[in-house]
Image 1: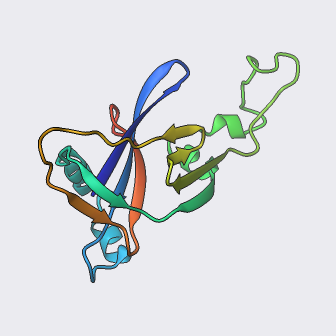
Image 2 (image 1 turned 60 degrees about the vertical axis):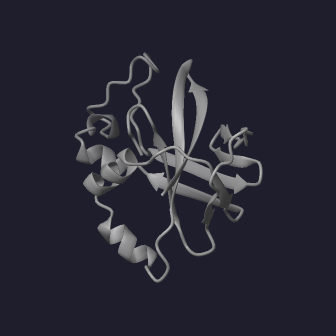
Length: 157
């Protein structure tokens, strides 16, 4: 696994976002890795990552996803806002009763030679020089890989 750290600010809060790349060993499929990647195992792997210098080869790619949040919100008992008779959104519109008909989350990732762009967040990977020779570790994503973005302080993925 390769984490790439970048900082951003949202609502005047500093966020430490990490773009993590999981490259399965040769001959291991993404499906196998996904089956083995429980929440507990992912946390263990993320906590064991050590900082080092690498030579990264990563293809350019863009992805975009849209998620309907109504079902996950209902799962955690956020239900009244979806019910016209129970929603109390007077802080938004005191005169006209409102309720939520849809909750949609849209996200995009753009990875290129300039870094990682996620929504309105941009990461730039810089090199540094040192008087001491550094062992070069090559991380070549020349086969299918998984990625995730995690907020470092909270651990949220």
